Length: 266
Image (tube, rainbow, N blue to C red):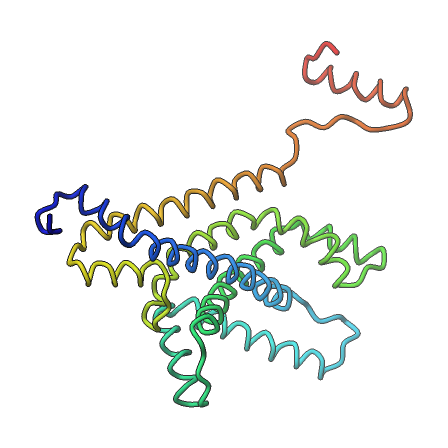
């Protein structure tokens, strides 16, 4: 039976049977790029976000203040450019531009990782900046008051709280990257969408191939979404906390006041 004589389900099964290996390799490439670039993008975003929220110290000289202002302007331009232009054009600009202008021929993996990481870093920079600013300024002032440096305040006080606030957006960026890796097909990256184009072009079964590919994308994103939700729940901790103290009287009195407020009997 030729493929033209098959019905819709038979064509889908034929695609899975004959091209299942290629689709699996494409999906693995998509996931690898998405995970690696999300991690690298988070590192870039945290670095840029920290610098953007860094304020000059009163004792800093004019040169240091000027350098900090220049760095912030450069980072702001980076964020605005990469958030304000399509990643498909960024891929073409970086991949072909590096070759024609600088004579640097990037490989498939190198180009893909650089492009998606830089793009993700621009979005993460704004997310991190917002997460840092969402932390109560009084906590930073208190840390400074006890002699902690700006870096110590960020590492031990602000970032742990900001990380929990921005965790959903990190997961969202991973989901977006799984889908947006399809734009890398413009530079010949053999990921899931590139595989779909190859199959549909060879068999002229665009609808069936698209259906199979969409199901694979959905399975990937849904699975990652559930895993990330579980991680967020772990970060939240238990809903209720027991008082931990070696003073039995303090423990008892504390529980009595808690029970009076909540109407508990224990």
